[in-house]
Image (cartoon, rainbow, N blue to C red; front, side, top):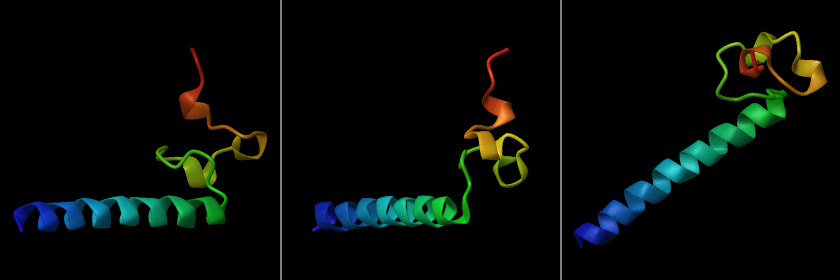
Length: 54
């Protein structure tokens, strides 16, 4: 019974993460993990400046 409950909790967490990613992609966010993703100047170029190699 405990295994079933833990499995359901894991599935709920994964499902919530997938829904969040889907929602952000529909908004046009390119780098979801980036704190500046919504207002990034390089958003139109397909990337975010905070991930640029130095």
